[in-house]
Image 1 (tube, rainbow, N blue to C red):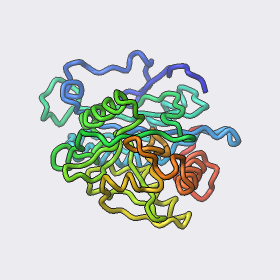
Image 2 (image 1 turned 90 degrees about the vertical axis):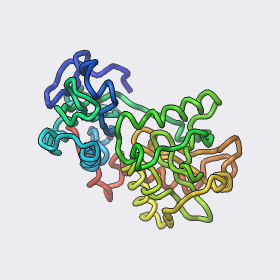
Image 3 (image 1 turned 90 degrees about the horizontal axis):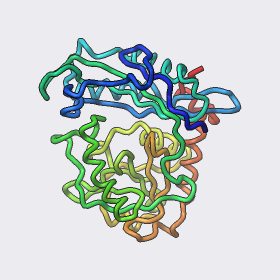
Image 4 (image 1 turned 45 degrees about the vertical axis):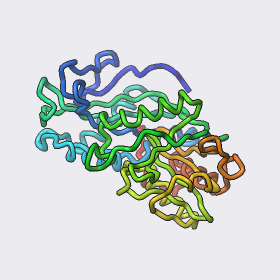
Length: 307
């Protein structure tokens, strides 16, 4: 994979040189975190000589949902077709022919207050992107002392830049304590998610994950994993998960656009199962990568070709 930086980004539907993709220091986006975004994966299929963007339409819909919750000026919100064209145009302009990660963003510009509804601008930046975590051998996790924010405080279902301070703190703590990731609980001690990813576990042969009302992102990857598990005839259960279930689970894994699907082999230095990626995780992981790379034709509707 080439490590070259992108040549172009997209600002308000127009390509500009990478170094010119800027916003003003006095904008509400910079001062107050008034920015929403989507992280979107594109996978290179060498057999097809094609870059395939994973669930682009769903990402755009979620961005528009985030803008609505954040009360962006409805008249200034870009259309889905405009946003989709900007993502594809940006990847094409950089002539990426390997795995990429595109960041689609919309923010409150100008010099208004924290309650400003506009003006609204949007942009796309795409970069070469390989693995975030060790998806083959697995990763270590701790249960963080930081608590996940609630829907009636800073709603996690909204992908707002300001939300990610609640993700940054536990992730920094995990790194300082020599873990790969942190698992976050809500105020009642139930599992929510991982900073920037969702969590699953296998208990008694069933795939278990917290429901969307338990302060998690309405993850597109999470929904994809549940659909693929159903295809594999793996029972899926959405319910509250106690901390101790993480210790007694036979398998644990995380998933997200950036994280992809990574096995968790230890929690708080206790081995998960036998301390190796489990059979259910491997089955779902293979199905996910086959779908994302266009190997599985049964999920072709999830993919958008770039070239």
